[in-house]
Length: 181
Image (cartoon, rainbow, N blue to C red):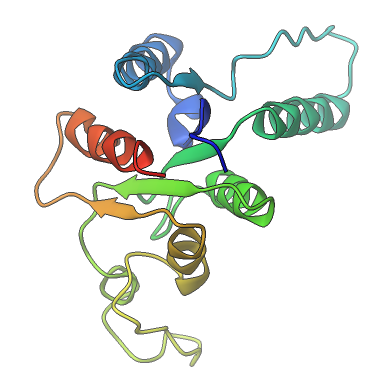
């Protein structure tokens, strides 16, 4: 593969208030541009919705638009910081899988440096008697395994970032690693 040019920016930031989302994405795009990459955010679409359009139809249109954006990209950097639970945002996880399934490199970062098992209660089984995996990985083994299998890397914060869900320093580490693909 040639050096990646367009980088898909996955993460829960799409759910943040507009001003917060825009500030984080602007910083990500700036850091990528410094290294000759173009950052592509899931909201970089020109979708318009009418008040009469069903929510289900809107959801499917957003999925197709994001899939088209991913298809146009050469790699992904995913924010895998746990969101609304003990694991990464499920949409972000899908996007990592979609990209790695196409043979594209995936890089990720998390601001939670605990292993998945610790976040799940540091026990062998949960309250329902189901096994909690213990592979000393930051999230489910399929996520981290997929990233490493793609030639990418997961970067983990040693301390809290400047934002609960974003660290320019961690993101910069992903970008620097991407330059060696």
